[in-house]
Image (cartoon, rainbow, N blue to C red; front, side):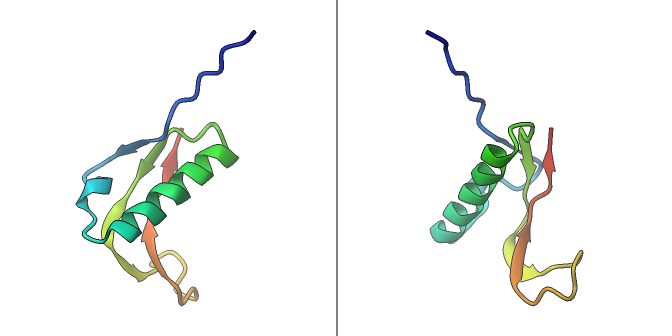
Length: 73
């Protein structure tokens, strides 16, 4: 029988999940980050860049509001 070891994604940087005022936003960000880790197991870190939804600075043509969170290995 093999043991499965799963490392959970770590949130690094100044902004933490507990910094979000809206619990639904916390859940959305957490689920998105966990989904990305499940899709690519090399992802181990997420850097949340702010707690407010805003227009993307990296893709100004995207009209949907975003919360930026680059990932690291």
